[in-house]
Image (cartoon, rainbow, N blue to C red; front, side, top):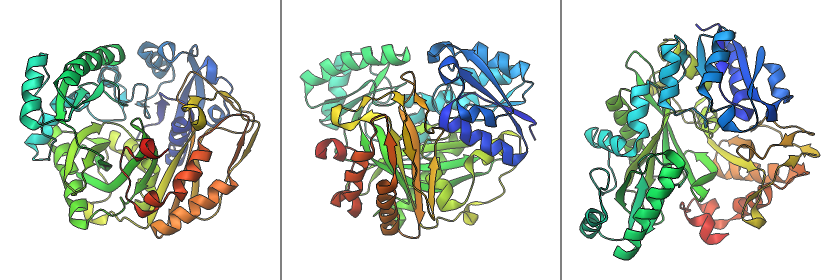
Length: 445
């Protein structure tokens, strides 16, 4: 087992990892930028080192600084959390070349699955359903037009190295396809330094259902059931829940088993999420793999009783999974709400500033994962999420009722947050009925 772990991240996920390390008897070494200096969660780590100025490119994304701290801090492993370098195959490789274990998948599998075209090829080998589309990257506009005519409009242009909706365009005809190819490639080049794009049939108004998996280095792969993440805005998730509402049991089993087959085909170990879209007829199609822990992992922890961060660490240390597929329950209903420092009445503009008052909800089955407190200053340099409110109840109806009660108790002053929108969403008839899709929020609100 590791004696010391470097946490190559900040905020809520850094605190989450510090807590897991403490319970496992492992010392934690935290890092921080000048913008995060003095943050209270850093006091809970065994050591904390400054790695640079506020800009992430000069601190949290600077591999040489992180490796320097890892060597000075005499750690045996690095946990990347989510975001920043969590899915950077080069960082994983550098860590291991420096004899520091990377708490995540092998960098070869990460590279393959991080590229959407090669991930699609792996999925097809594993007999996992994929959306009809191009066999590889689009070489020129004429090829794209030919493929679009074969599979039918509308089509979706997607960046092979994309994420968060960047490098993605919907085309309804040849004119918009040709224009969309240029703009998507330019956006992808700017965001990911990779202009490669491919084509898929556009599935209108799908649900977003993802499967949590974990695999060890001994060949054991299991799924921890599914999460529904359909309540989202511009491809950014707002609400996540498990189990997915109104998903037929046979579809649920098929989608979970498909995720396991894909992960085995990729030679993947540690935690990850296999993401799918589901159409109105419950046909599901693979879209991508997130080769890291997800923001929404707490909902899976609550319905299964499995601590995913601890399991990541144990797998990275070479231990075998302590459970098999038949041992993993899915008890009750868990729902997570992301709370962001944004103004939903002003196009979700970021709202940095100091929290002057913070009153948190509580009670049975209520969990709030966050690093903020009264007097904490939200920085403009990083992601706007200030915390995750998660509830767990025996039924979905009870979970929704609990969340509505929590929202009435939840008070944040000094900054704008997405809490007013959350109150509307949990009163929404379509959400309560479990009949929303990935475009519902934008169409409705």
